[in-house]
Image (cartoon, rainbow, N blue to C red; front, side):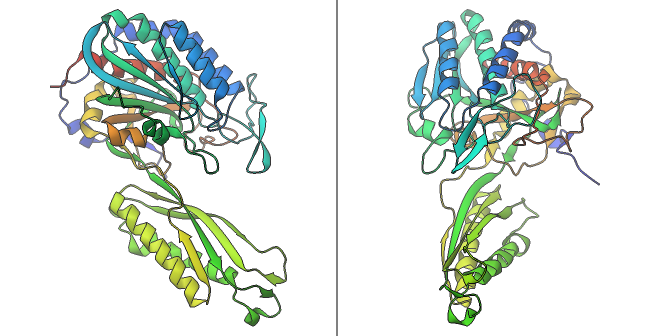
Length: 438
């Protein structure tokens, strides 16, 4: 039976004790505030959608965000991790510190959706001309958090505590050898002077129906790591393979043997894992066996011990299979800093579940399956208890299972998700600040 991402929220989450549980009904001030900012949020989202910027290049977006925050009377810090923008809303009453995050970057994707505000932007990426598109919904996230900022500033005199607004660049990953994203924001002191006791983030998601929210405790999205393997042989004429060492054949054997790392060496009854080769480069002519072949790919895991074991296994397979062919392997596994698991603090998720149910309705808050995609919100979740949730992006009447996915050139956002996102993030914020932990 085909199983969609969204299923009824498990009894396990409901069974957790709800310490100082958030209220079961939507706060009237949430409904009023969301209605007041609704048109502005749509306009912001459409503007960002029409003017997308790639990771570490979010100059216009960051400037627009900072400009509006200043208009609200806030004092945003800019230039964090290149184009990050951070502002703190000071409540009029003592209370906790929390943080809210939205990402701002777009993707090297040529838009295929017929919208009056569709992106016409093009750029050069990895040496190729490509379109630029908010194919993942970060334009929506930025608009939603600006709307929440409007609402919180309007009620700040009655607000207990402080709220940090984090507008983050480069969630999709910094290009080339650059650093970026959540890890760089933390490295540059995001939490140095303001350490929140909880942090919240959201993501519009194509595999969830508009009107629904998806959340689960514990691991939600996979750790993501890149690898590169270079297999070195000895070049020779294609008619005389015995005159050299064929790295192409060795590479083929490495790919085949690597499939057993997950299927035979990893306990996937515990948690799933993926090892995928995404590109192979080697050779230049049909009758020349090349000197070397390079392969790159990705590893996805949900458990740190499993993650490290797969790193070691892939390196071992690469080196020993290559050696059996008389070739040598240089295996960089991983070849850069990857994203850790996006982990929802169980107690915090249980505590805030009624907040999400209050705005979407109990039957519309569902539990997603484990997601093999990754999110660098995971870096914040390693520092402070956090909760990350999905807001449905696919319009009713369209099957979320077959709808164009996030990162597709045909990804299409149902704009009703903007209102639900504002209400959900605002309700979570107010419930947390007004209700101390029990």
